[in-house]
Length: 276
Image (cartoon, rainbow, N blue to C red):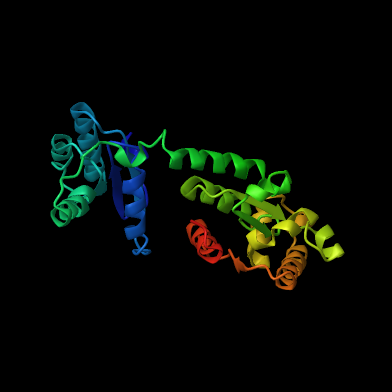
């Protein structure tokens, strides 16, 4: 157990929550990405919703602190004050997201918060949740141009060469924003014809293009098909040039995914197409 916890890390970070821990982890990531020179071990402790689990979490954090020789950083979204107080006994830098933000909001709004455990992810029967499920199913069915039917229901249709990031962006848009995103690969046959796939011409306003540098594309493709023409730098360079020329010719708004995260790409798509 102890050996497994050792490693070349500068500091350990815990995300502790009585729910999934996604909120704490998302917020923590946003802050910690500002410290690129620090190597972090990140550990999520979800569903800490009883005193016994709180004691286990406390022991786990203390063990890591003793191994590291440095106090861990803890991001917490624990709602129950008694459980929260147990975990706070650890000798750590404790960042209580609810105390930091909810209490000032209570003072500003003049209303006590509900202090409901798991409230941010407890919308399984809500319209928003159902919309996300529908969007995920749509994006999976319309991945890689495998289904033409129903494109009129798409909120966005991503186009670009194979392996430029269309599928992960589509799924992120669906899961995080409830956006129905289809995607189509641009292939050599399209470039030879000088036209987009025919199914796309009735949906120009929904099109958004992704590109990538040939060097990065070659690396990504090499992992999938080593030493193939598909992954060769010459072929990647040709496809990228042809795809960008086609997107310019067809008036498709596009960006390069080379140095951008999925979150950044998705935000650009939402802003450019004014999707909500």
